[in-house]
Length: 280
Image (cartoon, rainbow, N blue to C red; front, side, top):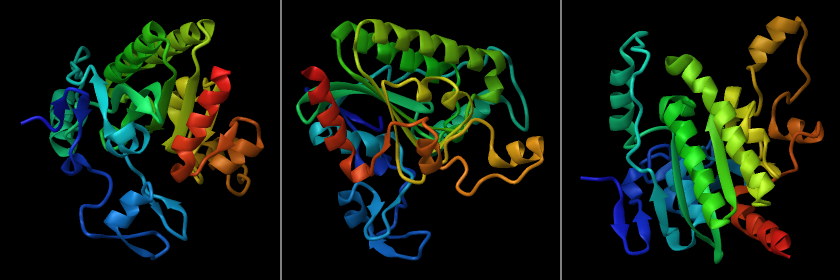
């Protein structure tokens, strides 16, 4: 049985498809606050008072962004092959199948189009729960096709990034996705179609080095880890202690790599305002 249902208005995902938000009735934040999961959902998965942004996936972001959670999913059944016959602690195909069974996802990104406060938009959202949100051939291809759809329909594109970087099991094929997606985004730029990049916790590696930082607007959620290499690797490489808050969204904003930070509860309204400004 599929983990979504199709209606005449698109594909709707049920609540049970959720994986990263706790399944119990109550959620305990890192700061110790106890909140009912219903209240958490109604608050865009941000813990009240603490403003802690719970790490969520495509199911929740689609729910937050698309009007009435109505959308049409693109390339829903695309999944990875094994061109390199890669084996580490287990064969790559086995790792894929296990991740699919655990997450009820086909790969680390879902793409869809629909309306956001009445405005047409295409959204590509990464899922960290699927092999660390790693960028392989399927991720690159699905985002490239989402960009093609945005170009064809002259619809703004939003990419929500949450990733550990390139997928090592696909080696060079994974790294090729950086150039492919970047080329597609260049076509959107030439056509003057807006591209919004939302960086969430964490956004690292090859994703940061490519499409996550190529937005007409680069936006982040509060407290997100944003960088290429991890802090430990950088510290050991340069042999110096790193500044306080290094690679936090706030640090990256202060150093000019982001346009602004937005609370998830205000995300839909802020994106809508940007679309209205651009329309004029």
